[in-house]
Amino acid sequence: MKFVQVGPVYPYRGGIAHFAGCLHKQLIEDGHDSVVITFQRQYPELIFPGKGQTEDNDYFKDIKAERVLTPYDPTTYHKTYKAIVKHKPDYVIFQFFLPYFVPSYSYLLKRLRRKGIKTIVVTHNIDFHEKWPFANFLTRQLLIKADYILTLSNSVFVDAIKNFSHWRRYKKSNPVQESKAKNCDQIIYHLDKRDIKIISSFHPLYEFHNRNAYSTDKAKEILNLKGKDVILFFGYIKPYKGVEMLIKSLPHIKKKLPNAVLLIVGEIYGDDQQYHSLIENSEFKEDIVLMDEYVSDNLVELYFKAGDTLALPYIQATQSGVVQIAYVMNIGVVVTPVGGLPEMVIDGKTGMVTSSVDEADFAEGIIKYFELDKQQVKDDIAEYRANLSWKKFVSDMIEAL
Image (cartoon, rainbow, N blue to C red; front, side, top):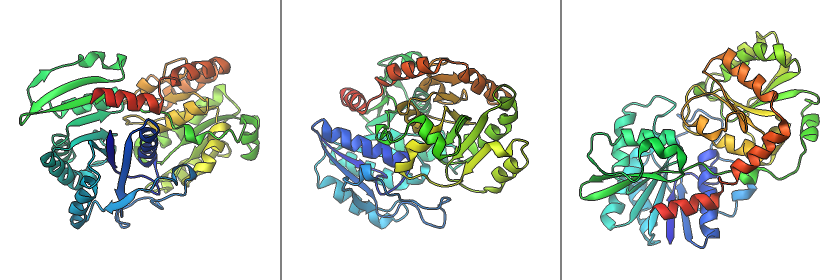
C-alpha cells in the first residue's frame, strides 16, 4: 500500500512529531510506500507559547518530508492537495491534536474524498486540554469528512463516538463497553451514503529514546541524585498536567520516603512564576529540581534512567507518550485516574493508579509504588510492553481498514 502522512514530523519537535516519524519508519519497514508532508511553518511565532518549534534529532534525520502546508495560510492548502495527489496514495493519514488544524485539514479531507482517496484521521485528542472557541463544532466538522478515525485509547474512542451520537448507528462491530479488552474495536456510522469507521487502537512505544548509555547509578551520579528516591516528571509543563499538585504532594511523600526528591524536567508553557513561587515556599525546596527547558533526544535517557518512577499528576488527559518512554526505560509510573491514563497502567504491577486527583492521594500512590518489588515491576513492564510495538500498531491499523 501507499500512504501519505500529513502533520508535524522532524525537524518539528514534540510527541506528535515523534509519533508520525515512528509510524513512517514502520510503514517502510513493513514494505509499504510512505511519504510525509509536513509544515512549511507550523504556528505563527506570536501565538506559540514555547521557546522553539524545532529540534535536532538524529533518529529522524533520514526522513525527507515535503514542507508544504502552513495551517494559517490558506494559499498553501491547494498546493498541499496537489503535493498529496501526485503520489497517488491509497490512504492519507492526518495527525490531529488541536482545533487549530481544522480549516486546513478539512479542506484537504474534502478534496481528497472527491478524488476518491481514502483518509485516516489519527485523533490524539478530542476533549482538548486547553479551551478553544467552538472546539466541539470544529472537531465534528473535521471528523465527518474522514473515512477512518483512529484513536489511541479507549477514552478518546468514547469521545469520538460522542461526536457521532446524533447520527443513526447502523452497525456495531464490538460493544463500546468491551473496547478495553481489544486493541482494535470498531464502530461504523453511515453518513451521506458512505461509512465512517472509528477504530480504537493503542499508543506504541518510543524505543528510540533508550540508547543504553546510562545505568541508574550513573545517571543519578551525573545529576547529583545518588542515594535519592527520584520521582520524575517529564514533558511540557502546562496547567492541565498538575505539576502544582505534584509539588504540593511532596511533604506528604517525605513522611514515608525521607530520601524522595522531585526531578521536574520540561519547558514551561505560559507563566512560570507560579511554579518557582511554589518551590521557593516549599519546606522541601532543596529536594525539588526544576529544569525549565526542552530536552534534546540524546538527553532523554539520562533523566529517565535517573528516575525511580515517572509521575503523571494530570488533572486532564487522553493518553500519554511519556508513559511509553518510561516503560522502554523499565521504570513504572504513577498516574491519576483521568482520561486514558489508567488504561496504560496495570495497577500494582507496572505502576499505580491513584484514587483521585488530590495531592494527598497522589502522594499515597507514590508511596505505594516504592513499596513494590522493583524487579517484579520490571518483569511486569517487559511482559506488558511486548504488545505495544509499532509493528503491531501498523498491522492492527491495516487489518482494520
